[in-house]
Length: 225
Image 1: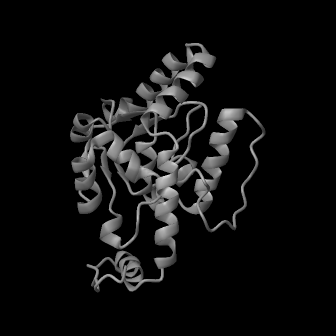
Image 2 (image 1 turned 90 degrees about the horizontal axis):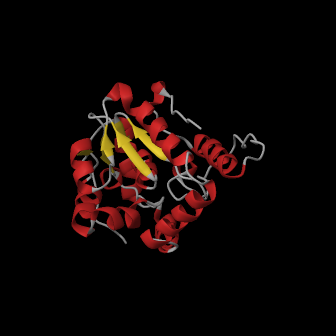
């Protein structure tokens, strides 16, 4: 199954409705039950996170073909993908600290597990974008593929996986993920969200969002946490 994000007017940003649509799609992908249209009035992301993917467990692998900027939720999704193929101009960033929010949709504990504490800290506390070549050296990207070939390479890799025993693929993936981080990431993210959520009315949170929308530098105040 090939899923393509195509929202050029929004630079492929995903809203909560889009996250629920993708979450429904991934569940169909795992179970092959009928796809149901999600409600258009949802205000919170699905339990599986951004794009129904950033905290997804599921049964079957997802191969990400990243072309261009994977910032914020896009990076959270890529970090939890099973394989990541990227074009040379792809870049990954977690920039919540720059806008006064918190990356609590799965990426922080998983990023530490992949990159190690110091590299994960560099990404998450500075908001610096990491290019495709550096991300490959850090272990976040499997392969770099020319822009015009990245989707085809992902489909080809999917074909190789799909040519193996489906039972073995599902069981092997589960073993890898349990060995990777297991339930710990879900617990960490739940504690982060529960601890941070009540503070969404803090001045720095409001100021960060206002500054982002107004395209200016934020004027931070001392933390009350």
